[in-house]
Image 1 (cartoon, helix red, strand yellow):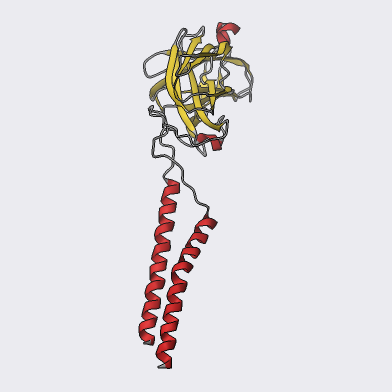
Image 2: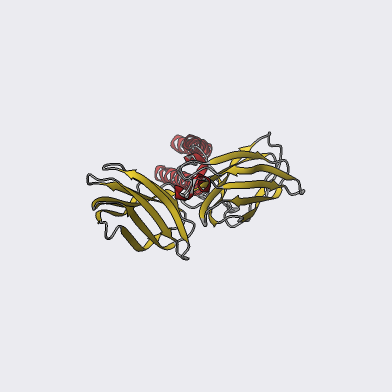
Length: 339
């Protein structure tokens, strides 16, 4: 009888262990299933250096051209120039994107020895880029040229805890008069953060007015009501952002419209929309899921149970199952002994 009761004990202990293991596995999988698929990526922990070398610029050959540099989409690239000999010069920096369109990125004046200048460029497309450094000089000199890939565009401006809540993200190559529209599914009584930035530098050699990029911006709700957000508002950049919050009154598709006003041939504009949470108290409301390409998928719902709670659940259910069994076994054992 003792052998039989021992086997029963071992069997039920094994059953409780397997039950606890299955529950813990399901909770872990559920908490990891909510990764945000439509966002671009997390922050990079380090930059990637493509070029870092000293080059000689001469009066006879003041230009340095790099052909077919492969740039990734939606990243910020930094072009750094530093005079490393005892001379002074100015520097023009121009870039051609994979379609052959030309960007006048920078005109750096009065560059003296040790004076580092850094010019950012956020990409709107992946492909082969050409970049030219043209020195304005009267003497031969040596200049250090460095090209690095940084983090994703805007990801150094959006807080880490908000990055998993990005519901729309894009970088667009635009010119004067460009019209950008997007239908976004918003839920009622929620706040949404909008981030904008001009992510490509603009040369000042064409005058101060050419340096600014302006936008008209409005949002139309599902009932056709239009909200004017900006009128001839400067888009901050390339190292700053323009941002605001928009609260909704109704669930449905909102038409987000941006009209660009600029005096340069091409410029890259980034903008992102972040779910900022509920404004009013939630009362038994069901919300549809945004079905746009850059939106959160329907099954991307985070389910999280604290580890302490999970352990408590395991102990509770284990006790509920194990204690009655142990009592029954012990009683049978006593009865058998008394006989």
